[in-house]
Amino acid sequence: MSMAGHLRERLSNAIHALLVVLIAVAIAFLSTRFGFVQDWSRTHSASLGAESVALLKSLDAPIEVVSYARKQGGLRAVIADFVDRYRRVKPDLSLRFVDPDADPNAMRAAGVTVDGELAVRYKERSERLKVLSEAEFSNALLRLSRTRERIVAFLEGEGERQPLGKANADLGQFVATLADRGLRAVPLPLANTGKVPENADLVVIANPQVKVPAAVAAELVDYVDRGGALLWLIEPGENTGFDDLANTLGIRVLPGTVVDGSGQAFGLGDPSFVAVDHYPKHAITQDFALTTLFPQPAAIAQLAGTRWAMQSILRSSAKSWNETGHIPKAGEAGDTIRQDADAGEIAGPLDLGFALTRVSPRPDKHEQRVAVIGDGDFLSNSFLGNGGNREFGQRVFDWLLGDDAQIAVADKSAPDRELKLSQAALTALAVAFLIALPLLLAGSGALIWWRRRRR
Image (cartoon, rainbow, N blue to C red; front, side, top):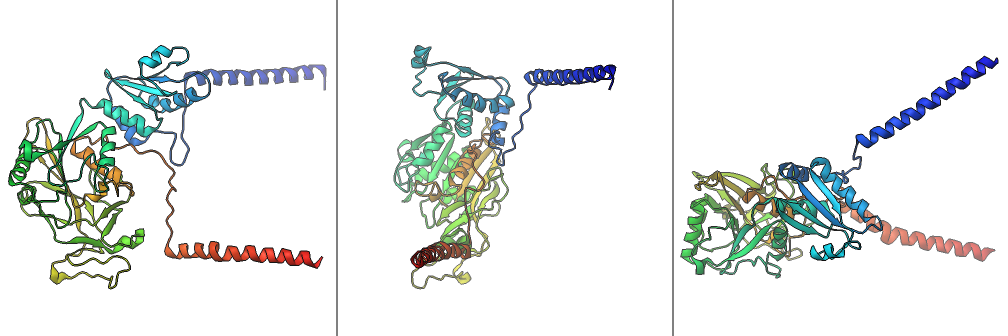
């Protein structure tokens, strides 16, 4: 190759190298001006849930986040990455770090005790967070977005479930979750006060054990007629003096206890424990895919000519009916039960819960809401942790309080955290690990011993 050819080749290579460098510099410069984020994880665990996004879009003022995290370690980077998920949806959310070592007075003044603790401020109100999770952060924003604390009054005086109680039948654990969401539970001793307070946003009747005084029942009917929101939890066989209230709401409680033969698919040995994994369409059940468990529920029927728009929110399977006789326990002699139409037992599906609406008689509200559910155990301390009981209860309360868009924000988790196996698969696993594997190990040990002995 001639000298001129070598020069042209070198010049071409130099220009090519220069272009590559210029393109790399341009890409690096543009990356500082424009960003691109894509979450390719299976559960989108690095992105906000739809509920959090909807909540952020409903907030019409800036959000200020202050993190009291030290410069040492990688905690600040973790916090910044987490907050960026929210900032991508709401650009007027700001994050500021305060070093506790450099400014200990600011930390003491803010009452901060944990490295990395967050102070979230919105519209002159603030909350502190010690746990970094979407559920905690979004629920803090939910509480800050509410203009005032919501008051939930629980009827008491006739042996009802205690909202702050720790007994198995009480509601203390669930009410604690309501408190985290900006709701305050208060007792309502109507037998003493005679009237529901005007500041009560919701009244809850949670399974009285004895018949309530006529004046109490009359006041609750009047409260509903005035436009009040109500949650009524009913158990089978209750005779608590609420016949007028049932007529006002246009419902009737069917006799007996609902039993459901489909419970065996969920591993339930007691047919009176009803598992629900399919729900009628309603705002409460929208996109709700968790299984809920209702121990010994009552079926509810709708009366004709009611003034309410009624929608079922809970329904048993086609293998269910309202059993009016004895329900044997698993293993009990004669433990087979069948529907008896002559005894008034009605074949399923049966409604276990209704959501009722009508135009509100109150001028300050557009719609009046009531929910009636044929079970109170599902929110009790004993059964709250089963499946989606907690989240379903939160959805009911959110709907009753008119917070349709501000529903529970669930923590992201792996989609395969539950392993469901048939009885045949369980038997095969038991045979493999309890019989076959020990025999295989014993056989291999005997073979090794025999070979060594022959040497």
